[in-house]
Image 1 (cartoon, one colour):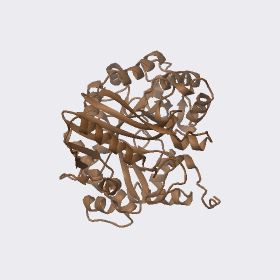
Image 2 (image 1 turned 180 degrees about the horizontal axis):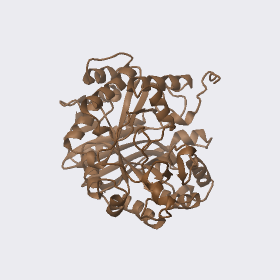
Image 3 (image 1 turned 135 degrees about the vertical axis):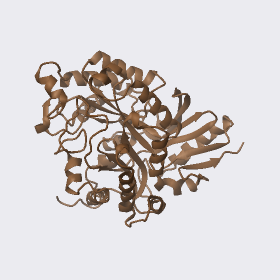
Image 4 (image 1 turned 180 degrees about the vertical axis):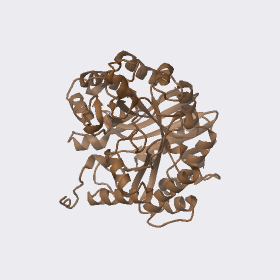
Length: 461
């Protein structure tokens, strides 16, 4: 590959959301509950195929988390991407089911790689990362709803996690039983509530076209996701169900007892779904990277989202879509849109999981999104679950010559959140923070709490 020119960033969309994402995959392991009907069993991490890009990379490096992080850092550097603000994503089956020693060592070695030096313990590695060149500003764990309890929550707080992605797939107990999911809707509700109470940002993985479902039921499921206060996720990954070699679903398909959605059905359903996604939710991904040779039936188009959104942006529906990614400043700049620089603060309050959520966003008159903050208040407790400023990622301390990061938007959002907490007469505000962001919050008057999990600040009356 020819090296990029000076100031040229190859594949710029990878860091347009303000962070540099590094996905790290765990070694193969079977799920304790068994195997879901749609999930292949191909001697690689559960739900993946041997030629999926992250599997190929991880397998080449013997699933060593340290080596995987180093490899991705080098790849981003080669493409001229900044690597000061790293979002770590732990992939590959249910991480919380691995042996405890494996979990702690896996996470520690991720931090060691970012730090450029090895530590004796996880706590030491996290401490070093607070001032490292490559700082972990967010850490995501992928897991199942039935793995979430008080013990596992304490553990993922020890890891320095700030986001949890739950394999929800649907909201129907009959479908859960049929596909051998191993849990029900009640576990989804409980996990969502517990995670929000502890300040985590929550993503759901949702599948379209599962057995026993249909487009009408799937649409109604999305209506329920955002009308029922038991759910209301902050993020979504939407995966149309595909028939993959080695999955139990392949047998049903060959017997004529299951048929996946066509591309037209998926696009029509996605268009209806996009119109009801609220302003506080971000659709992280649509489609999975399944190599053609492992697909028995179903839509393969990995780039379906790109073409689908391109068509939406040129249609009369574009001003009706409130989903976060569709509105981000980074993509607006990439698409050469004319951007009004006059901004304002918009606050949306909504009930969720027995608490009040305040979604603060900095937008312009065209609803282009510059930054956001999620504040949760319940039982006289206040916690900021996310602060995020969008636009091309910048290394820490670097001045911006374009709209987006390092323009004071984060401080403005936090100050507004503090005013809300003050008006509610709550004496203290906590922030769940990636270890690499702690220095930033310290400058705003926050300090680490006794447990070492949250940044906190007394709010003056």
